[in-house]
Length: 339
Ligand SMILES: Cc1cc2nc3c(=O)[nH]c(=O)nc-3n(C[C@H](O)[C@H](O)[C@H](O)COP(=O)(O)OP(=O)(O)OC[C@H]3O[C@@H](n4cnc5c(N)ncnc54)[C@H](O)[C@@H]3O)c2cc1C
Image (cartoon, rainbow, N blue to C red; front, side, top):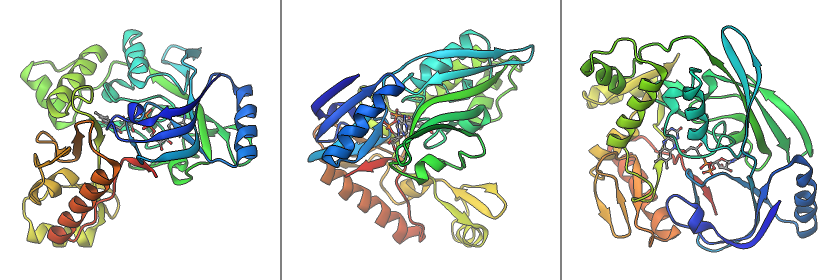
């Protein structure tokens, strides 16, 4: 177990914003929790779980907290039959490393989620999804350490209460540490992706039966085109959630703004495009000093490494207020804030 003091959170955060952590701990084994709980109780400090920091921003100040990262990194086959395989993956494993592993072994189910940054342990928190695929399609259960009861147990897919960028873990901040995640992957040939960008990709290539590997490559190619690279342009992916409204609100918006994209997601719920709302409010590609709104995708805020947390909070407010003034729809951040 590594216990670091005065850890630089700015270097962790993909947006390159943040102060200093009192403790930063990497946990490899379950027994190590005992030591962390001792420090927590003795020094009365909150525990904050972190992965790679690709969806989190930290205040610039001193964080008198214990940041805990799952350090273990392992993919285990636990059962295999004619149709598929059950695997258990340690929470510290890099997400895309897992996808590459599955593709290499010709197991389908994760390929649409290629190229998403972060760890396996963080993936269930917001139920990562992209290009028509969602984590909950293949997740069977998660193993959690409950920081409230100090017990280790499993939660199955249903118990995780997955929704759009949401889960039981997200609804109970500070309660659960995800130790590992289990999946059921298939040996079936993958279906031709229906998501517009991917469907077009394969249409252009006249490929009606893409392999798992070809689907992964298509997703990586499309992502490269549509998203700024966080290695050269610090960003946390979509900064805002796509707002969800009821049918009545959606109808009245469609009447006023005929070209507004709307996607029914469940009975009575319509998802709007946050990127469209931000773009139509005049923010897309705009420069705000040390921060800018991506010209490729208006949902993304890009930093230059010199922005402060205050700069970010003020830009967030400006965008939320701008969209609300134009459309009477209030955006909420997707990115998590540790203040
Ligand atoms: C360029 C870019 C593109 C992206 N594209 C997508 C996309 O297509 N789809 C998508 O869904 N997301 C996307 N994201 C968001 C991000 O990749 C995911 O949210 C990812 O799961 C975050 O992983 P992380 O390890 O970096 O988590 P962090 O940012 O470190 O943490 C995220 C949240 O999870 C909690 N957490 C982390 N680890 C654990 C754990 N072991 N147990 C309990 N809680 C934990 C943290 O407390 C925090 O609340 C993108 C981000 C970037 C930068």
